[in-house]
Image 1 (cartoon, rainbow, N blue to C red):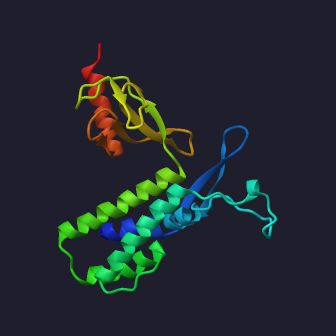
Image 2 (cartoon, helix red, strand yellow):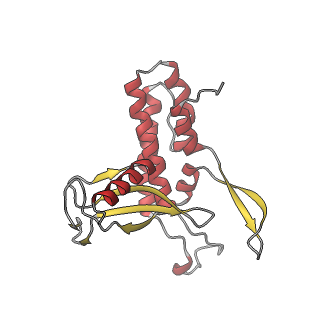
Image 3 (cartoon, rainbow, N blue to C red):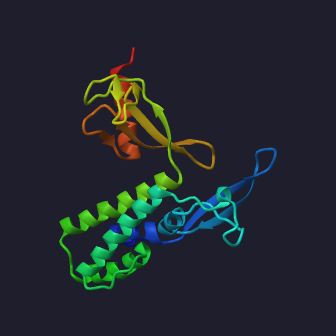
Length: 219
C-alpha cells in the first residue's frame, strides 16, 4: 500500500530541501556511460543567493566598479516579500519570525498542522507555496517561449498589445523547457490578449488545448 503524502509538506520541501538532479554521461558514440547525481541548494537558498548573482574575489574598496557585485533587484524584491509573508505566517501560529524564509517555513509547518486547519485554509497556503516555487524557478531558469499560430479559443483574438506597448500577432504563448535528453517539456500556455490573461497552467491542460486547436483548425 502506497504511503500517503501531505501536499502541503511536499510544497514546503520543494522550496526548502536540496534539489537532486540526475545527469546522464554520454560517450562520443552516443552511448550511455553513467548517470551522475548532482545536488543543488534549495530553491529558497538559490533565490536568496541570486540577490547578488556575481561574486568578486578582489578585496577592499579598491576593486573596480565594473567588478563589484551587481544587485538583482527583482530577486531582492520577491525574496523580501516571501520572507515577510512567511514571517507573518509564523507570528499567526505563535512562532518567532526571522528574515530567512526557509527557516520561517520550517518553524511554521508543525505549528500550523497542530491547529488542524480547515481544508480551504490549507488550500490557500498550498497555492501560495506553489506559486512561490514557480516564480523562483522561472527567475533562475526562465522557460523558452514560442507563439502558437492559432486564435485564442477564449477571446478569439489573433494579435495582442502588452502593458508596455509591445505586442504582435498570435497571442497564445507556449512556455516550455528542454530536458537532459534535449526534448521539449511543455509547462503551460498563456493568452496575452485576454484581460485578465487566460492561463492553461499545467502540462496536461496545455496539451489538451493544443489538441483542441489542432482538431478545430484541421484542414
